[in-house]
Amino acid sequence: MAGEFALIDRYFARPTPSAVLGPGDDCALLQPTPGMQLAVTTDMLVAGTHFLPDTDPQNLGWKTLAVNLSDLAAMGARPRWVTLAGAMPAAEETWIAAFAKGFFACAAEYGVDVVGGDTTRGPLNLCVTALGEVEPGRALRRDGARVGDHIWVSGRPGLAALGLAQLQGRIELPPPWPKLCVAALEKPRPRVALGQALVGIASAAIDVSDGLLADLGHIAERSGCAAAVRLVQLPHLPKGETYDAVLRKLALECQLAGGDDYELCFTAPGTYSLAIAQIAARLELPLWCIGEMVAGTAGEVTVFDPDHKPVEFDSKGFDHFG
Image (cartoon, rainbow, N blue to C red; front, side, top):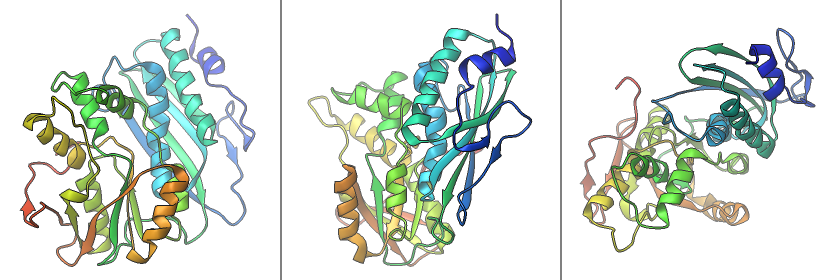
């Protein structure tokens, strides 16, 4: 069985043309583009908490990097470099090779170099630090939303949580939704191009990792206002012959509070609606206007039914310590 450094050399040592010095020393040396600010994020994925222990390792490699790139996307940053630290219970080379394949496929897709990291023995735990660049004063933040701004979300939030419910046997989705939902869970697409396109247009942004209502609540809280979401404006979710009341209820809960989607939720003045529609067409990505920011208690998010009556939900999102 190969040792730690042999495994790193075999599976994770790749050329890093954008770095002054890549893996192999005590630190990587990076040279940011002159005049740009660095955006830095770190995310941890723990087996049994963030992914099922039997998740396909190639898909897990992709997702491990993708969830970090999603944070950069939410800031409108261009991804540049990442480091990877991982604990594994054993050095299973077949698993490691598949994981590395998925991880570097995501890195190649989004143009980032892997410039360092660490490995150790322990319960399966994966941690990435990602660095991106953004022009000074142009980063998308959570605190810029204003009363009257429209609320938008990309893609179809809720698919990942439905995929998890399908894998856990809690629901039987009608075709073709099982494949689509499990793919959304195991191989999310960070909206990097969307984030960069929204610079100068969006007043605030966040990626949907803990649930749409919870993450929108973070924007509302940081911006000092409230949010109103309209059920009739939400993206459509599974329908079919087996689309009964149970599935309808679960789909709505997943859409509003499921999390793990890594779509972007953002706000923008109504004057940018045409520009946002043009971005959606150019990126071939559906963007949905789901409500508006309103005056009220900072951080409060209210969902309204078609009769404009507020709807109560037991949960608005995921909290590790809630």
